[in-house]
Image 1 (cartoon, helix red, strand yellow):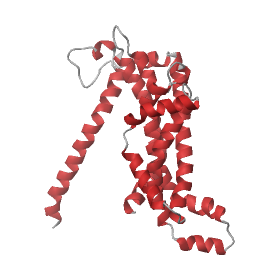
Image 2 (tube, rainbow, N blue to C red):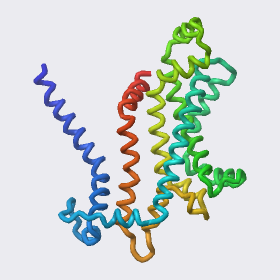
Image 3 (tube, helix red, strand yellow):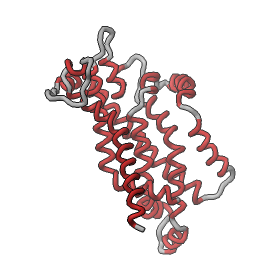
Image 4 (cartoon, one colour):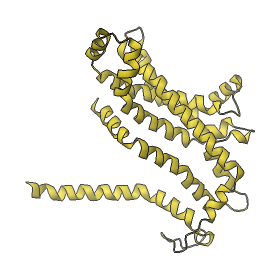
Length: 277
């Protein structure tokens, strides 16, 4: 019986490797182009390797005075969205799961509907809203919209984790003298933390890679721009600096990879818990 399953298993593993190669090839080409000399990048016969790697593209990236500022702005915006969305989503998921109130089902349905609306359709209304709030050309104009778009997904996902915690555990904690606040932060929060990590990954990636809001809401004060806007520095009317574009894109990818490495164990358990629910 095992011999019969081996061909199917081999075929499945081969297909998985091919799919992984297809997905990873654009990343490989990006990193390769970042290390290629200018002559090889502009060659009419590109090769999937280089025998003369160069750091010139990275030097041009880090020599841009605005690049470091954009990097710090991106870290601040993405970090703020991750922390705020995790905190608010945890409290909201606990409320809609543990407490019964009117329109609770309607509220949950509204969370789903909010996920279905395309971001592009809301960009213009959000622009006027940020203008009325006086937030244009500030990092707050980037934090608030991303926070609003991250919360529905985070609340829905954390709702399953909160629901999986037995109510008997809360009753036992209250009988032992623990307050509801103490149960919330010292017992419930550690149990749903893997779910918080999974939602944080979604919030971090969507915020870190955002170009639409950064281009729409940061109009004149370029000191408030984020890292995706740094790519525009290498698009020039006479000739695009493709080496600089690929090097800047590679630098942008590094924090995402570091974030994944730091949370990978929690992420796997979090996604497993979400699927199980």
